[in-house]
Image (cartoon, rainbow, N blue to C red; front, side):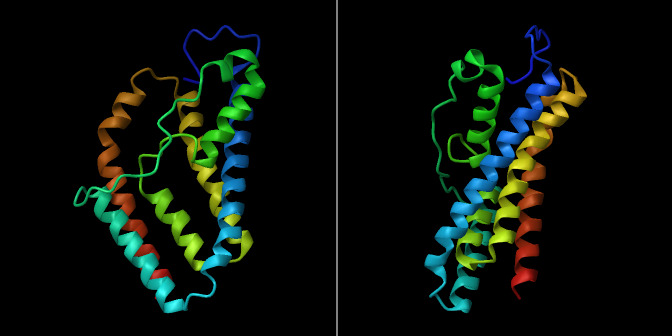
Length: 184
């Protein structure tokens, strides 16, 4: 956990949070830049084939979130070592944030980021749109840490966990509908 109620470090929690968020944004942005570079490989595919593939991926993602199909998501089953944060707090928070922001060092349980990344890979959008999407992925991950820091409520995580399945399903269905409308 990045923050604990018994925080006694010589560095303020807000400062660590700011460095952590910077890492998340940098990680998301770099990953999106890599996705954009790789998206050039899909450019030769005809537009209708790419659109069909994106809609199929989005439909599969929504079905997975609704529990209709079981599709394992790629993951790195290792935890980020505690030593990363213990040795050098600021550098460790930046590294931890960067690794979380890339989405490849840790497990991302939601399907939407994978659908988004594959969709961006297939659509071969302009670099700015792709990089902004990655930056917003990092910002979305930062929002959780920021809200936890601001809430300072020890029961917040349990309350959120109860609502999460419904939120994930609604998000997946809304994302599929928005994607379908944008591609038509």
